[in-house]
Image (tube, rainbow, N blue to C red):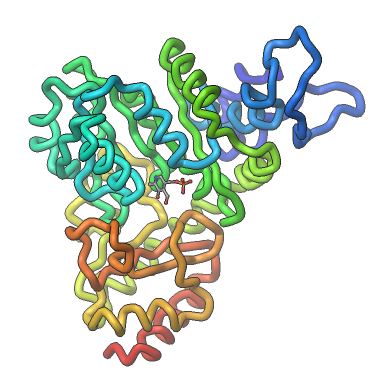
Length: 377
Ligand SMILES: Cc1ncc(COP(=O)(O)O)c(C=O)c1O
């Protein structure tokens, strides 16, 4: 495309619009094609549809512009995460969250129980505990904010400690997004996204990505994708790139809504705790401000009510959808402990709320309606 040098200098909201475009030529298309081919003529650099195609390349280039490094697209966030773990030798030591995203934690528990890996499960929000666990580890696997308690990991400090100990460091940046933090710039080796969420943003596809600055690591991850076979569909990649064009607008609006709703929930006696790093009262506010450029659009809050009432509340809203997932234009919430695999450190009465781009007063009216429907006073 020959534009990367210029793109590097642009602000993020320009990058998301300009990145991943075909090169300029008379009557050339502005957008990449949906490359529906398994098979290519002999002699080119790609070779076969499981190894690459133009639509993946466009989206990979766009994510690379946002996160830095070079990106590989996968069929899901979990496929990307699994590819990272597939690189480790049998019995390798991993340091990871004891209460992180339940998909990752469940995968790690299984790998640990079957003795494929030795996982040291720690509270990543406790910097001393995390750093103390690093000695002898091959991979430090981080996520911040931690899903769903929205605690903040001291990424600059913990990544530095991991690298100083010669440990690989991977960061799941799904919740924060590159609008807020760039783990590769902090020294991480790999950044992971569930592209399903904020980057694509419309709750209409499942994709994942890995980005890295390390050419040798990129080559190993590419081999893991090539032979693991967890590849993206070109149509999903194309839709995700279209969604990415409005990523910064969506994220800004969702964040604004989240801060306003977090303040209203904090002032509400029906709520016993609000977890949102953007609130000055949040225990992680100072840390978040020290290295993040925003606070994200996820709120978790504990409701002063029984489990049945919280379930009823989630199911009674009309604008906010009771569903699992996050990062779409649509507001979504759910009682997280309804999932058997969720960490027991997550309170039963906690609602995880992915705040969308709707009108904030409409969202608040819907929350009020849901409280009333569940007879929460
Ligand atoms: C933080 C985080 N990482 C990874 C994933 C997995 O992504 P996917 O559903 O695209 O496989 C999720 C999904 O919810 C997530 O929230």
